[in-house]
Amino acid sequence: MSDIPPSVAERPELQALWHRHSFVELDARARAFSLLDEDTGQEYCDPFDRIESPWLEPQGLVPESDDGLVVVKGLLAGESCVVIGIEGAFQGGSIGEVSGAKAACALQLAARDARTGQPISAVLLLETGGVRLQEGTLGLNAVAEILSALLELRGMRPVIGVVAGPLGSYGGMSIVAGLCTRVVLTHEGRLGFNGAQVIESEAGIAEFDSSDHALIWSVNGPAQRYATGLADAVVLDDVPAVRQAVITAVAAGVPEHHRSEELDVLAARLSPSDGGQARFSLPGLGIPVAPSPGQDSLAASHPGSAQQRGAES
Amino acid sequence: MQTLNLEYHAADRAARRAHVGVVGSGDLEILFEPGTDPTASVRVRTTVDGFDVVWRRVLDAFFAHHPVAGRYELNDFGATPGIVSLRLLQVQETSRKPAHPESNRI
Image (spheres, each protein chain N blue to C red):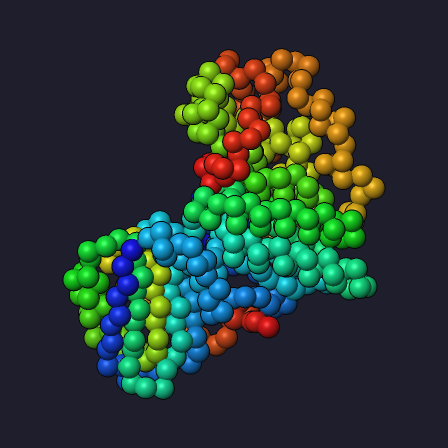
């Protein structure tokens, strides 16, 4: 990094971009280890345990040795923490029977530890299209078990959701994101329930134009999610920045009321007072993003079709 | 989906097991465990059918130059021959390095 071009050297605001160590470009395993204190991470059910999905081979798909989900336990700023990382490159980061069971068991064990006087927080790296279509109800069941374990743990220790991108968090796992104590996004992260193409195919292009990237980012992107209080921090795609945001989110502790319990606040968001004309900008980068004329509501999702189409983003 | 099993004579030894890659589009994951027999046994599972000849040529050429003994499991999602060779080199290189923190396990 010695050859910094003058165009960067002259502009201090670009230094962080120039020197950053991308979090988004890491795979799930490297992301999980990079968040924890150095040399403290231990992986559970690693690739050599070969706990694969039994449902993919019969359908002509090659399984992955960790089923696309990584569980690493270690220390975060000196305190116990388990990181559950979804690998977005494998089957769209989808949750199947095995990957879902790994995530649910990790949260259940964390809850058991927290209950028995060994406090441990959890971090979920959500890079997912939702339930794995090839595994149907087994994936849906896994999401339910994850939700149940998360609800128990979050009463005792923080559960932090991180949506780094580029895939984003969609489908059933976004319910998980919604229940997290706090949510950290990068500028590359998107958080939604139905994917843009699903909404367009179900409700028409006037409802949501999936080719309009500015529209998608103005609805599912980090600036919007932060502005409407569905995310708590938006950080640069940089390992130290993401790690610090997670440490801060854990240190803030267990809130008296979780976001998902504030039903009046959530209901108010369904009827934006400005008719959906609000403009948002990406914090720190000064990029204005505006909804398209066809976009008249922030609540562009259609309940009911998400779980069957969970892997569609 | 197709499964191929191949064996090569391999006299070189590796220090430890290694895992690289991901079963993502145009990529593959490789699990490598060192062996004591002078053999490299390779199992390939690939989503793309009908490329047996290409696989054989790529692996023949690779193990002729890099005969490290052990078991190789390749889970492929449409990687090109170039990517396959790079991942094989990477897994052998990783298996020579001292244990990385990521090899920690319970």
